[in-house]
Structure formats: C-alpha cells, structure tokens
Amino acid sequence: MSREVPIGTTTAKVFYGGGRRYFTLKAACRAQARKSLRDRARSWGENARDFDHDWYMSRLERLTRFYLAIHKSASRKDKGHG
Image 1 (spheres, one colour):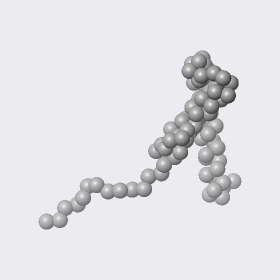
Image 2 (cartoon, one colour):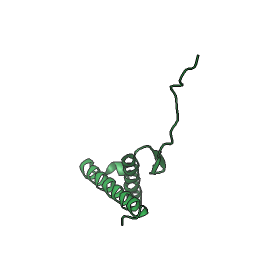
Image 3 (cartoon, rainbow, N blue to C red):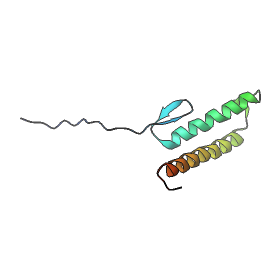
Image 4 (cartoon, one colour):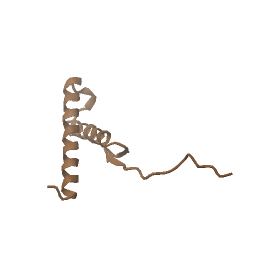
C-alpha cells in the first residue's frame, strides 16, 4: 500500500534587512527603514521613540518605498532591463 507524503520542501527566497531575515521584500525594506531611522536618531544623540509619531511613521513609509525602489531597480539591472 503506497501513500503519498503530504509534506514536501521548496526553496524559499529570503530577504535581508535591518540585520534580520524576512520572507517578504516589503518586510525586509521596512526593517531596514526602521534601522536607518534608529541609527540616524543615535547620531543626533536622541532616541527614535522620542520622535513625533506622525513624523516617524511618514519617514518610515517613505524610506520603505525608497528601499523597495532600490531593490527593484537593482534586480531589473541584474536581469538586463536597465
């Protein structure tokens, strides 16, 4: 009696950002944006938690879009589209 095994494996694409690994590009870009804001705050002698929430969130979203664009542009060039 032969049974199919319901468990298999696939190769996952893993993205790195902010010093960690993520399964989605957007999560990695957001982590990198958070790290950039934290590092910038430290260079100013402040804590990122001290920033105005609205200002912080707008910068976080802007940096996330920036890192997404950089990644997409680099991957297009790797494939010979740019």
